Amino acid sequence: MIYTTTHTGMIKKILLPLALLMAVNAFPQTKSEPETDNGFPFPVRGLCIAAPQPQELGLFLKFIDEELAPRNVNTLVLKVDYNFEYESHPELRDSVALSKQEVKKLVQVCRSHGIRLIPQVNLLGHQSWAEQTHNLLRVYPEFDETPNVKMPEKYVWPNPDGLYCKSYCPLHPEVHKVVFVLVDEVCDAFEADAFHAGLDEVFFIGEEQCPRCAGKDKAELFAGEVRKIRDHLAEKNRTLWMWGDRLINGRSTGIGEWEGSFNGTHYAVDMIPKDVVICDWHYERPEQTPVYFAMKGLSVVACPWNRAEVARLQVRDMLKFREHSNPVMKVRYLGVMQTVWAPAGAFLAAFYGQIEWPVSQNEVNCFKALFEEINAHLPE
Ligand SMILES: [Zn+2]
Image 1: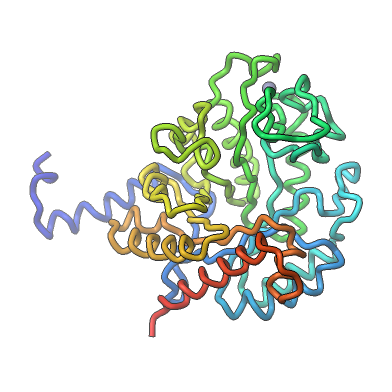
Image 2 (image 1 turned 60 degrees about the vertical axis):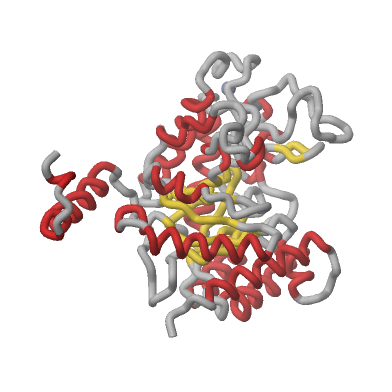
């Protein structure tokens, strides 16, 4: 108590390393995210985009080589899902999918530019989209958290079932035997030291009709799944990345039911391991939630989508947060990552002026603005 009221330089010198030491010991890390590199303002300067279709690979490699590298992009999260010729589970492959040799071309070009390649497969949520059930639940319908909710012929939101996307049941005894084999195989192929599990917009969790989950606490179910994935990755010294929306109280913050949670999963923010990297997406305005995650002991990447002015503000916010924080908090503001939700081919076509589709064009403009803003803050 004496020390906390004595603001002398000497006490600070003693207490600061102690605090750092305690913080490190309290939250053992699987692998420390880098603090910064080569004078860049923050260590993560990312792009998240769907993995290209095989026929788009050549253009995508050129894009990495000629557009990402010169802009100092150093992190590429590729949404792979079932666009890979899984050997462990060929029944889950898309009909057209990247081969291992094609993936190695991505690995090679990223490595040559020092770009960290992180594959993504959506786990837990996002197991369907509109009228379409994705591969996992199509092949293994027994993993469905809500088998009674039938896929509509014509999808509309809102709907009486509350169907946004299907989820798998996190307590099904067989589901991780399948998905963790996929995770391992995709991480091995991409030679990745981190994996992005999605985990966004999980609306169906702990449903009454699930014999395993009914009556269970939704935050505990969500946190349990995060921990299970994280622990599996940690066995091979890999870090878990995930979207942050389920960890934000959508009601009390006014952030809403998409960028935040309305079903109580947000309490999981205090239950998940601290070495999980949170991708904090906000597209309408630069919500100040990176501070919330950092104060919870979590490292955070701010993510824009389609508004250039929001992207620029997110860069300036992250710089400000780092500048105005103590050393313990500062290093948790990892950086920024552009998200692209159009197919990779559509994004590339817009980027190279081959199509005029506003969705892709706005993503292209946002991406360019984001990296202009980052690179404007490089040291002289
Ligand atoms: Zn269940």
